[in-house]
Image (cartoon, rainbow, N blue to C red; front, side, top):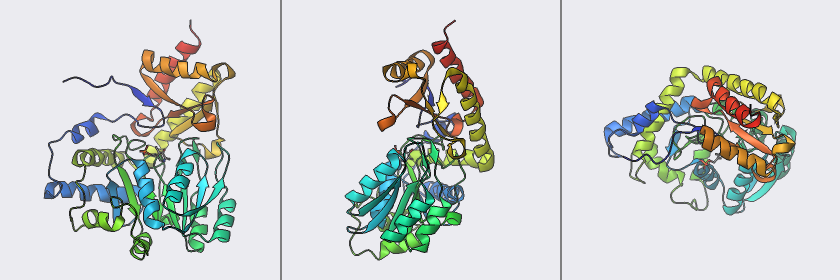
Length: 371
Ligand SMILES: *Cc1c(COP(=O)(O)O)cnc(C)c1O
């Protein structure tokens, strides 16, 4: 059997490395998607996802596609043509929400904040009060900049004005505590390849009873047949009516990844992410890399660092290539306006370990300060 790729240490903005236990689980012999043995695994996954999302939402499931499909599922089910949406834009993924919502026919009101800063809850609340939107949507952990956004206050303002709140938990789930019910979130989505350390391909999603109700009283059918919640609920909701063939092997992998999260415990896991990030920031400082984001809103699983002048532009791309080729380490470059100016270093899920930080620092020292 030929191996398609060599082993890498994946310290970019995702995917993160997949532990052997998860790889073995995903390689188990296939079952049918209506086999009781598989349905038991699916039930287990839904239950573990509810615990991790901090919700009792019955409609919680691993959607058969990546995180972007989770975003699309939340927005196209809750929005109809002509509906208003207020969207917080603090980077590329908030921007993507605007694109998805406007393609669904919604009138989008953007509340923007410069890259590297967090949304102002007051600015969001004012827009919500003015527009009275059907949906308020924003990102918990903005992976394009490394900023953690305030959730509770924005969700509260949305609820006070009758809006449903959609939260992107792609990078936060499994690395930061998530509490959908305490915060009052109505629809949330994540992805497997970031802090869950499972291969890309599934988007855990969760919909509150209010959200499900709203989908039930739509005047028009959901534009996407594949992502229509009322159809997905026929299979994932418990009746097990065929909708599409669930990706069995991917779900086996996710089940094992979620078992590992629970064995460790979310508090210990969050602490491990914080410790690894602190070691990274400390170790990079003497090499001339300064954090882009202020400490109080800095994400633990994704650190954006400003590059020293000497590395901006083409040299940074060359250095990333050297890290990959000579040291087997992947780190991420900047996106959009920050391209060539920052690096995004992910310490996600299994990779949030000080030993990995040391390996990266050793490689960087060898490249930047040759003996
Ligand atoms: C990665 C990411 C996405 C998109 O997920 P894909 O699995 O690449 O489709 C969406 N939102 C955030 C915050 C992300 O980091």
